[in-house]
Length: 406
Image 1 (spheres, rainbow, N blue to C red):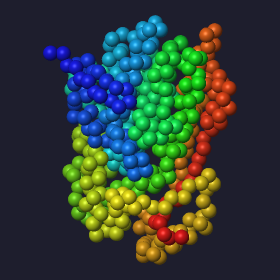
Image 2 (cartoon, rainbow, N blue to C red; image 1 turned 60 degrees about the vertical axis):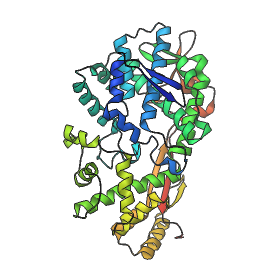
Image 3 (cartoon, one colour; image 1 turned 120 degrees about the vertical axis):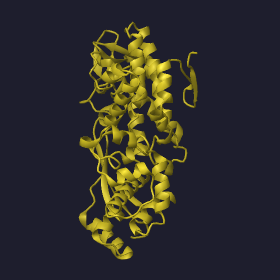
Image 4 (cartoon, rainbow, N blue to C red; image 1 turned 120 degrees about the horizontal axis):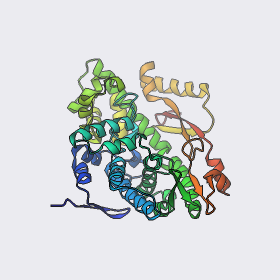
C-alpha cells in the first residue's frame, strides 16, 4: 500500500507527503523528536503564542522546497526525480541537529559543535539505516554536489529555511512585520549559470523580505527580555554542570545527566553520544529546572525560579558600551544584597552584546535577473536606500541584573 501522509499546517494548509522514503524519515524517532524542540527557544515568555516546534518548521520548509522545484521545472530547469527527493530530504533534515530550546543551548549541552554538524551526523546515521538512500541529500547539504543552486535552496540568504521561519515565526508570535510573501518570492525564482536568481518583477518582495528579517531580529529573536531568559537558561546549565562535577546530586533524566557530567566536543562526538543526544529535548530541561527550583544551591534555585515563574532580571540595552563604573556599581549592590562571592556574582550580573545584519553582500548574494539578461545584487538593483543601510552590522550592548537593585 502506498504511504500517504497529510499534515494540516496553519500557514500553508494541507501538506501532502506521497514519497515512501520521505514518509519513513518523518516517522523516524530522530525526526519525531523535533516535535519536542521549540522553534523559538524561550520567546514564548515574551510572545505567548510562540510555542511552535522544529517539526512544524521542517515540514514547512519541505512544502516550500516542493513549490520551488515545481517553479524551476516550469522554467525549464532540469531537476531529476532523484534530485527532487534529495532536496526534499536535505531541507527536512537541515535542523534535525538542534538540541533543547534550539539556538538557546546550542553550545551549552555540547561545546563548540554547531547544530548543522550534528544534523550531518544524524543524516549519516540515517543513511546507514536506509541503505545509502540519503547519499545525494548529504552531498547537497554539504555543498559538494556539482549543481550550486541546489545548495542555495538549502542554505543561502534567500533559502527555503529563511522563507519558512520568517513567515511561521511572524504568524505564531503575532509580529505582523515579519510576514513575507514566500509564494511570490518562490514564483520569481530562476537559475542562471547554476546560481539562484530572482526575476526583476520580484524585487519589491525581496526588499520586503530583507526589511522583515531585520524587524523580526530586533522585535523577536533579539528582544531584550528573550535575550535575558535565554542567558539565564545557559547559566542554569552551566551551574548544573559545576555542581555535578563537584559530586552534588541533581535529579535529571539519564541523557541530561550524561551531558552534565561529560564534556562533549567535536573530538568525542561519536555515534554513542549522538544516540544519547537524540534522547534530549525541551522536556528534559524544563522538568529538571522545575526540580532545581527547590535545590539547596541558592544560585541554581534562584535562576531556575526565574525561568519557571518568569521572574526575569532587569535588562538594559543600548548602542554604546556600558562604562565599567556603571557595571561595577551594579555588581557591588547585588553582591551585598545576596551575600555572594565573585564566582556566584557572575551568574546574577552579566553583560553581553548582539549583532544584527539583515543582508550581507559579501556572502551569498541575492541576485536580481533583468529581462535583458543582466544580473545585479539586490543592494545595487534596489532604489530603496534602506537596503544599503540594512547591509551594515548593528551592534547593541546589554546588561542583566536582579530587579529592584538600583
